[in-house]
Image (cartoon, rainbow, N blue to C red; front, top):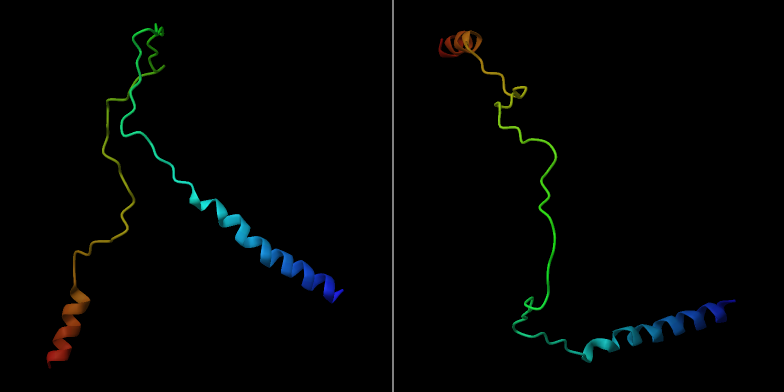
Length: 84
C-alpha cells in the first residue's frame, strides 16, 4: 500500500513541470486594427427606454448617527469641583 502511494506521489511530482512548458510562445498583436464598414449596410431602429426619468430629486434624509448636545451643565459643574 505504501509503495503504491509513493509511486503515485512520484508520478504527480514528475508530471508538474510538464504543465509549464507552454511558456515559449509569444503573442504579438497588431499596433492598430482597422475595420471597414463601407460595403456593409447597417439597419436598426432607435429604442427608447420605457418610462420616465424622475426629475424631482428630494434631499435624502438619514437617521443621524451623531447626537448634538446643547448643554454641558454636568461637565461644567464637575470642572468647578476639580478647580476647588
